[in-house]
Length: 390
Image (cartoon, rainbow, N blue to C red; front, side, top):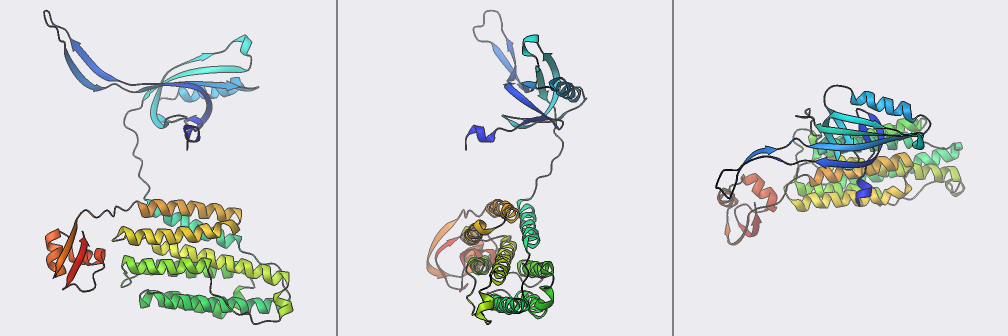
């Protein structure tokens, strides 16, 4: 990525304009005292000078004069505002001086030179929590998948075969959820929702959007089930569950289609089966991403979860429609930011030769025992040996 990729269009108070050059000025407020018969002066430092930025904006074309007038009106407004500087990014500034230059030999062209100075204390701008942003982007992916789902018309035989095929896929999905190591309450919540979809799939498929909405609800329950009381899990368990869901999204269980060969070979059946499989895979990734957004005890667990998610998303991207593709890419970036934002560097490391209880080691290393056990994956708290971290 070069500086050309980081350039942006200049803007002040929401007014976009073109620029041809810029200068930035800063320094320190130094007072030099020179005394008679003294070779070395005394220098007092009164801190940094107010920064200033000089920008040459230009306007060109049939309506250049109207555009220039509009820009000058923005400069004349009192108070500080955000300047989008094409080279330096967002700056909180005040417009101090400006001049307008035009000539007959450059008809249709005008340059406005502006001197901006630092605007003082910038208004409070709350920092967006990366986890909240990731949840929002994953939710947008879920909505994009829902809006993208549709079916082509089928014959009665084709529709019945499609329903049978869908039920088999949902049953296979139920088996995958059953094999995860999630707490019983968490798994039961998701399985109950999936069981309801299976029972009503014939009705739901009459309006494809209703079926897609039902699968979105299932993904939300599966992804957010850990927020309920008694469903707390360790990073290792979460890592295994997310990995299983992500792998299922790109490698769904094989099923045997029970239907007339002529029907299942028809184009409408193949098209609709492919679209339903794509929806199911995309929402499994949504569920896995929602489940993955949590605090981790070790970098290993966090990195394992992130790698599983990125592998699943990258595998599905080529087959996505434009809207779902954009939502998936945004979710991918937000997940990386949210998970890598956690500081999981372990500062203390010891090698235990003779077995010691975790209570003693946790006390010596100044950490909570439960955290110590989770970080090190200790199975026998009374007999801890080997390399430990805190």
